[in-house]
Image (cartoon, rainbow, N blue to C red; front, side, top):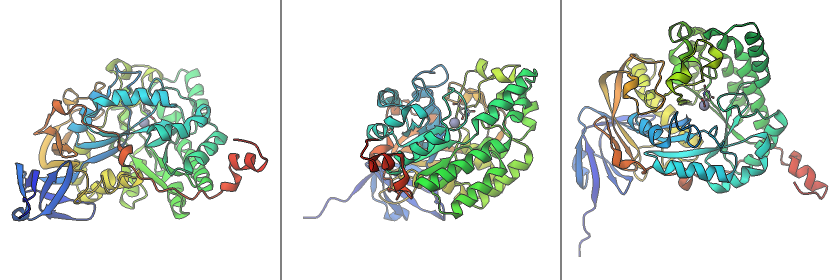
Length: 479
Ligand code: DOR
Ligand code: ZN
């Protein structure tokens, strides 16, 4: 008896495959949501569907480690349906979603509410639990309940979640370090910003640039350095969100050199915009941390080139049009949409020679997959990996148009930017969620929580004997 020949669900022919380190012409076969084979067209199995992608490029789908989908609580700004639709349209196959919703994701009840909303997701997702001063006793339950990591707001931003003092951060790191989950940090010093912005407001400085003046780079440098010290002490893994200044690169480099498990991301707006944005885009540009002077932009590109910055994420932070536009800068909400425009904007930079496609794959797919324990299920084009695939047309020229964004809060500082290179198909675990540039609406609800496949190595906490728990237990007390 001969075995039935294996049949694939989909074979994609004619494209060039791009990984973090190679680029080669190959066909790719997909079965049961995974990559079955990569090779010569004649070596591919029969398939239920054959897709011609001649002249196109296949990349592992982008993993955006930083999005705010607002649901539950601020669903006039975004929902899981609209946010993940926007991701699908942007070639993003996995997102990590932030806890400054209402309720904040600080306990299991709130997490379960979010998991309920996330049932509408088009793409796969991880959920960050909140690490705050008042919920340290909830962190282990949140891990049990299915978070993929934690977020700590060292500085204030939308949602006004209180910034934990260093003592609480240290204790939070002690708890999370034992389990290996990464803590993402909004690394800005709350008290410096509070004093600066109070003085500016008291003196009626409410122009857009007052926002930048309230948050000088020292705000970020201090927080990154402090977080790195606490992570080094506890063995916690950390991820520095939205690196905005050249100044942050030094503490990042030093911490990496000391062996701290620290990763860092920057966002397209820090790489592509500078202080002129405050005149041109007014309150729309208000974002935390702020878009900075040109000199920082150049240094950030350097950090991208030398690997100090590991990832490109978006800090997708949608707000309504009215919330974004205000003559009083202090009354404009911070942040803007981004998950759908990242790929075309960054592919344009590749067309301009600022980075390579391989670097791009490393920063948007491989690095986040590794940092969050998803590699090689995600972040790779390998047999056995999830078929999270984006097919890209590098020659496609499109203008960014907020009207074409699926996000509810679609104000973008990149309106009318001409981009070169765009995703045309997005597949999540072998299923089209965007096809020929159109959202596949039947795929709503296809997205799954990545926790089911996540494997975080447990770090060896470096100072276990000095943790709050150890010190109490030494005295026969319970933590
Ligand atoms: O500008 C921002 N907006 N920065 C953040 O860190 C949070 C975000 C939001 O949630 O609106
Ligand atoms: Zn954010």
